[in-house]
Image (cartoon, rainbow, N blue to C red; front, top):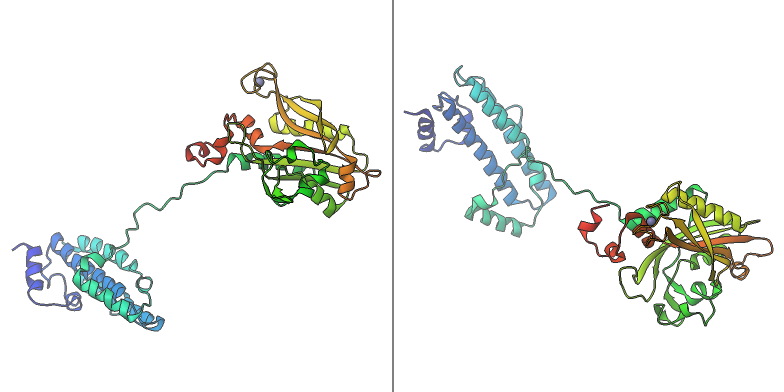
Length: 397
Ligand SMILES: [Zn+2]
């Protein structure tokens, strides 16, 4: 008779417990070849799996009971002296005949690895008795459903996809780093502002068009979503006095309809330097240094007169196109120049509003759009792409 079949015949009819089986040798169990040995170990493994499943299903009424049950099961299988694993080692492996020893060794090592991973302690939780009874019922009805598959340690690990820095954050950090290295500090303020900090303190009169309902998102007549980060400049002057060197990154809001260059929410960074003997030359030198750091040593800067209520004199800064070197291309719209930002010397009235004596101190300020910088630097034609959360776009950064 085939030995696997012989093994089954000898063991199935008579109800031999797993303890009784490991007390006998493989030869006594009729396992005389590889198949017979495999069947014997397969049965051992099934028994362990079944007890493990029962343990999960039964639960425990409290932590103490859980610990006791887990310990007794662990001892039953893994105890060095008298545990089922060591009995299998003693009776099945050590006393195996030469012919089946290699296969018995392989099978035993496999089972030992499996048993070591049973982690009885982690399988059981303290559950109310009612729930435990339901689980027990479930197990007796359909043991194959609740029987857990043994953990397969050879499966590949769970890999979380790595994210990336959003292009706006990336641009903002790059700009911040340049000014941090120059000794500026980062200052932030509320996005919901008062009309005083957003307009009045910045010398923007009641009649100025930017205060119009059509340009600004008002919460009530005295409160609004800030239209620029300039209020932070006033707050910083009040907080630190002079001298002060800050940049103010943050979100701003305007009543713009979204299109490829406008968004009702956008990002700004403003800079403010106030000290004794600060002149327009300091402003030019700083912004020229900044442009070269950001766009490359080759670029030149251009300052043109402009007007802002909070600076006097005011200027617009452009940088020579870093793509075509000023010859004219798609990025600079064939002009050779890229408009960067507005700037100027802080209006003495604004210094006074911030509690700083304009007779003693002077300062300069600038304001730039982070979104626009990112569009220019990364060659992005639509500002909306930044805020739509489309992974196909964001994955490119
Ligand atoms: Zn160009």
